[in-house]
Structures are given as structure tokens and as C-alpha cells.
Image (cartoon, rainbow, N blue to C red; front, side, top):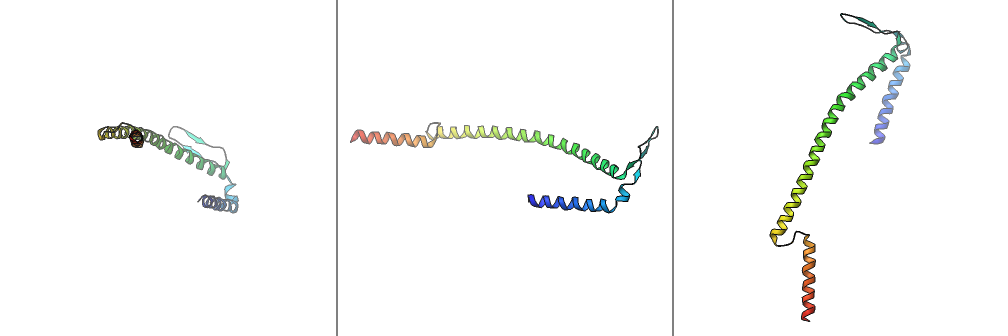
Length: 130
């Protein structure tokens, strides 16, 4: 999958390079942008169209990053709260397991430990009777 992604982006950038190379006259022409508000007018100095395209692309990239950053921060809070909920449920599970073992008559320890202790007692009783 990693090689596919690298190949895919190489093809995309290659095609973009071909389009720019074949249309150098368009991208190297100078043009200025003007913005006319009601109370003021602003005009940029003449720049290459390629620089204007790159600026618009960069502005869109930054705006999309800001919007996704807000979502990622909210998701981080959700993940933390769910992690805390998992921890509390694991504690409840261990408490219930210990309560179940104490109701069965065993100690709050592990069942294997209880079986080993019982086997040791049986062996001692067999040695005493022999």
C-alpha cells in the first residue's frame, strides 16, 4: 500500500508538472489582483500567475488544516474520556471477580494458587499418614 501511495502521488505531481510546463506562457504572465470593498480598494503588485495559484492553494491548505485541527482536538477529548471509562470498568471487573471468588469460598487470590495450596496440604497429609 505504501508503494502504491508513493506511485500515485508521483503520477499526480508528474501530470501537474506536464500541465505547467506545456502552459508556461499562461503561468509566467504577470497579473495583479484587486479587491474593491465599499470603503476601500486594494490592489496587489503585478505577480506571476504561478505565484498567485500557489498562494491560493496555500491559503486553502491552511484553512482546511485549521478546520480539521478543531475536530482532532475534540476527538482527543473523547478518546481520553473513553480511556478513563475503560479503566473504571476494568476496576469494577476486578472487584466483581474478587467478590465472586470470596463467595465461592476461596480467597481473593488466584484460583491456581488455591489449588496449589490444597495439593501441598494433601501431600503433607499423605506423608504424615505414611
